[in-house]
Length: 179
Image (cartoon, rainbow, N blue to C red):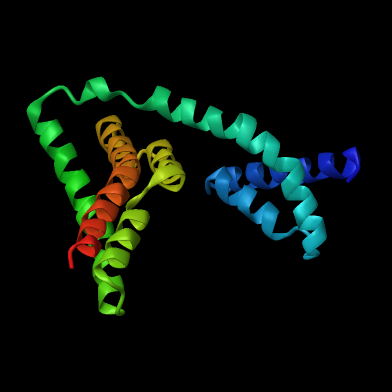
């Protein structure tokens, strides 16, 4: 793709983001709409993805994480009540997503190992959760304390995925070894 086409695509992205922001909708939705209106050619979309991906992953994504980290004021969680609330939020998040997806997988006939693994994978929050809570914080829906709690929940549930999968594999490996 020529530099003019890439520049035009970035222009469309910025204009649609600005338009939705002016309308009172988050700029993220404008960026999404810019992607939706691109020509339907698969080759064209692949070329755009290749050109934009390096900028997105190499510059914008790390900047987003820095931005979120700078906004997270863990020092605001300065009493035991707020920490108990954080623990309850984390527990409800785990039971809701890990437990719910594990139970659904088991009901659908998966083995316990597969059901627990599905629960572990679906329990992660990661980038999408951070995007949503940043939007909520920008809109004033989340207080700085709740924002910090939600960031901690997103980090905790994401970081627990690897150790949880290791534990599941260890438990079910022992079951296979027993005659």
